[in-house]
Image: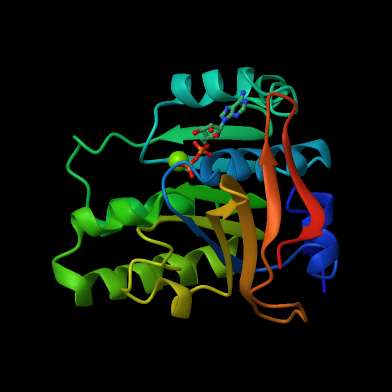
Length: 224
Ligand SMILES: Nc1ncnc2c1ncn2[C@@H]1O[C@H](COP(=O)(O)OP(=O)(O)O)[C@@H](O)[C@H]1O
Ligand SMILES: [Mg+2]
C-alpha cells in the first residue's frame, strides 16, 4: 500500500512509513498544540516529493499562516511552492456557505495528492444540529477518501478529548492527537496515535513533539 510521509520521519517510522493512501486522518488537539503547523509541514513534505496539496483554511488567513511559517526555518520554504504545488485556499465564513459549496471545494481539487482542512469544527456552523453535522462530516470524509491521496482533518478539542464527541474519531480512518503534558512541572507537547486503519502501531503511547524556530520534531523518547 502506498504511504504518504507525515513530514515527521519519526512518526512515519511508527506507522509503517506514513499515512495509508486514500485515507482521512483526524488531527485533533487543544488550541496551541501544533495542529496547523503540523498540517503545513505535511503539505510541504509532499511538495518536496513533487506532490500537489491544498490547505483549506477556515481559521487563519493566508497572510497569518505564512507569517507563522516565516518564523520556523523548516516551514519557510513553503513560499517557494506556493501557487505551484501548494495552494492555500482561504474560505471566508462571512460568505453564505452550505454543504454543497463546501464539498464542491474538494471536487475542484480532486486531482491533488494531499488536502488539509483547518478545521472541521467550522463545519458545525453550517450544519443544522448534531445529526446534520454527522451526515455532512461523513460526506466530506467520503469525498476526500475517494479523491485525495492523503487528507488531514484538523479538529479543535477541549480538555484532552480526542474529538468534539460528535463522531469524528469514528468517521476518520486515523486519529493523531496532540496535547500538552506536565513533565517535571513543565508542560511539554505530546503526540499519540490512537487509530490508523490498515496499520499496526502502538496505541496511546505519548511521544514528545517539539516546536521551535528550527522546526517540528518528534523525539523517539516516550513518556512513561
Ligand atoms: N517560531 C516558533 N518558535 C517556537 N514555537 C513556535 C513558533 N511558532 C509557533 N510556535 C508554537 O506553535 C504554537 C502554535 O501552533 P499551531 O499549529 O498554530 O497550534 P494549533 O493549530 O493546534 O492551535 C504557538 O502557540 C507556539 O507555541
Ligand atoms: Mg490552528
